[in-house]
Length: 168
Image (tube, rainbow, N blue to C red):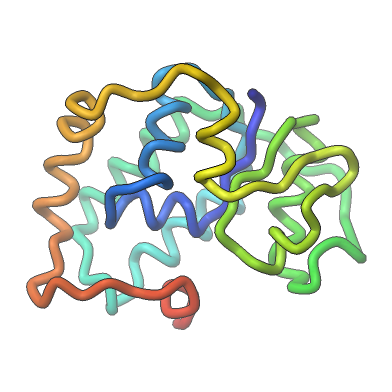
């Protein structure tokens, strides 16, 4: 599948285990083909570098560089005016259209409410994982993220809500 992955999924996969991490692992394994823009990469970095996450800068840089290496980077040549009810999300839709992708994978209600946009299905990580039979080896996935988890373990064991991820 050709996919665009929303910023919230990248952030969630970095800090926590679960379906967002499995979505990223499928891209790494070559099950899905990722499309992205420099602007999306910058937004991922901006969110992950917020003080509330207290994340290791080197781990974030490594993660962003790893995404760049496995993704097809696009230059957006269109501007959507009436896509998402949150205009900041239109960059995800623009990337999807430019890349002619099959799916946008997100946890953002402002995108999910659309269900489809210009022939692109908009799904949750769980829904996207149900689209193929091949699943990622849990051992491999755990190994890949173990160092990142050690660096970013929150000493209080806190979890953040989706809304908290995007507050500055």
